[in-house]
Amino acid sequence: MVEIKYSRFLSIAAALFLIGFTFFVMKELQLILLPLFLAIIITFLFTPFYEWMLKKKIPGWLGIVIVLLCIILISNISSVFVFTSINSFTSQMPKYETKFVAYYGEIITTLKNYGINTESIQESIKFENILKEGTITTLITDLVSSVAGIFGHFIMILIYIIFLLSEWRNIRVRIRKAYSPERAAQIADILDDIFKDVREYIVYKTLINLSHAIIATIIFWIFGVDFAIVWGLLTFFMTYIPNIGAFVSTLLPFLTALIQYDNIIVPIILLIVLVVVGMVIGNLIEPKILGDALNLSPILILFSLIFWGYVWGIVGMLLCVPIMSMIKIILSKFPTTKPIAILMSYNITRK
Image 1 (cartoon, rainbow, N blue to C red):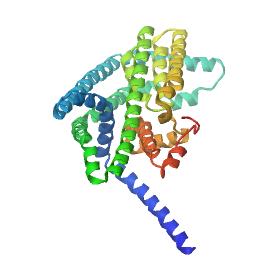
Image 2: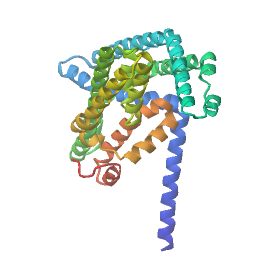
Image 3: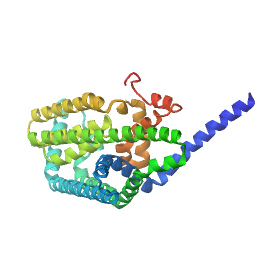
């Protein structure tokens, strides 16, 4: 009995040590592991195209070169859109600063007319001083630095992608040589299922986000909202973060429209349209296409956002749901870990 308790204690201690050590490694090796995770996701996105080229008898090395050229082209076009939009945003900031201060003054005046003491509000929130000190400009500069930091890992990401694609075809060969034919076939089938499910999740989720971003950008253009491309890009990236991302990508364009227009009717209509589009995509289209891969517990998502956000910052928050979905898919493929995958789920009756 004592030996059983001691063995259980050692197992718990070993598990806690392993969790702590993993956290320490992921935090300390962020500059290496973050580009690797990004490279894995990008590799999953481009493997259908790469496999199609292999079926067309295109040499593997040439297929890798073509994939890299596509990634570089897409990255360059995206970076041009991002930096052009940020420059436009910066150039129009004085106009928004003036309107923002005017709206703030009107709100304070209205509150005073209703007999509300606004001194504490004015003392704690001094927007005029914030704008004069260039805090907004500093925030934009920090944003540009963050984007530049991501592109700073670009070469490392490309190197990882080269190795991942190069090894893609050799996995089956190595499994056949390492195991008996029956065991090799079993392992190969499990790996095929994992790769297929993970790849489908990443590809479909990215396509859904892209469609959502395009629809949102068209809506912004129709309503004449400034920085439509910026808000479209924000929608694409933020919708990887459940609930919080949708809220942020809807709130910021609404606030922009609120300052931009002289009446509140147009911004309210814009808000309603964005909310309806987000609800249709998030509650109807996504579950139908992604199925069980998206079936994650809200509590798990919340703690994942906190964990990955602390470990890898905003990029970690963007990657948290894809990472947890990949982990859940992998765990569901093995009998010993399938209960953990069930515990990670929200609706256990979903097929």
